[in-house]
Image 1 (cartoon, rainbow, N blue to C red):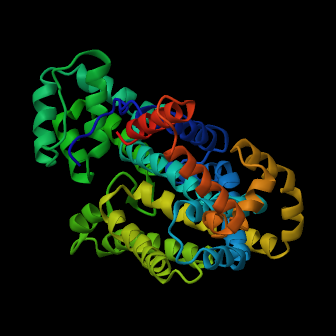
Image 2 (cartoon, one colour):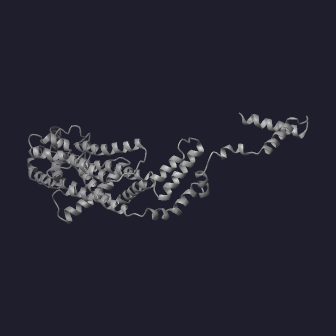
Length: 422
């Protein structure tokens, strides 16, 4: 990580999202801590409950995505028939007709090819914003920041505190982070919280040695933080990779627990993908191979990314995958009993309205569907008598007398033809 800021992330897009998500988490945390009296692993439990809330809010999108996958399998024979109908035809009229029939088919079943992408598009900014929240919890959860209040006030009131904190900061090997102990007011307090929140056990010892008059306050703060910010002995703001490095050889139990975090993230994502139905690709072998490859890569990405992101984010991923799996069990049962004919009947009026909105009437859609090369070769359908009449008219125009109306008409015709070529 290149920097830590207690001040919330100020990005114009992700910043407000992170603030909003942090506020929701803070309310859940306060309820657990103050109302239910849960003081151990409070933040991790808040993350799990927060995950359930997020995925319940996203459930309508999940339902639409799953409905699309189910109906895609149902409409595959009809879709394949349309593709076979226009196979090998690359002229503009045929391509347009194929597009119109395909769109009408999706309208008929009330699904959108883009529907399966919406959930992913919405989840990505949430995931990036949550990274900001979980990496520096006190920046977004005021209740957690309050734990440091007495200790920070005592530290900044001590003479020479800036030099001592700077020394602790360097000894903790947090030199890549941004701190400024010469700041004033709220900004200074934020920097001190930034430092304390990232300290390891040895760092807290150094803090007590540097401020012996605040030893009891520092110990009390560390104890409160260790209860709310730790989950199964793991600091949720640390990355599994850093925990493995710090504890390998000395505390193998913690190192193994840290290793299990990304492994669980991988297995939970894999389970979720196995449970999730996929839209049929028909004869599109290339697309099917791409989907299969993506289903293999996504859990592997979770495995590797989880090593270098906060444990809290991995908890969110694992909890999210388990919530989605439970949802999927019920959705699969629901879609097995879904009446497709009823869906089609219900969408008749909507499909017609959509087609009309695009400026295409039903009869025109049928014309496109039944279009053949006959209309493109209408000249061949002219009778011999009609052809003779046209030839006589052309000969008469060519023999027009000088100064006659026929000659003037020919001149105008020639002029227009010459201009149309430029």
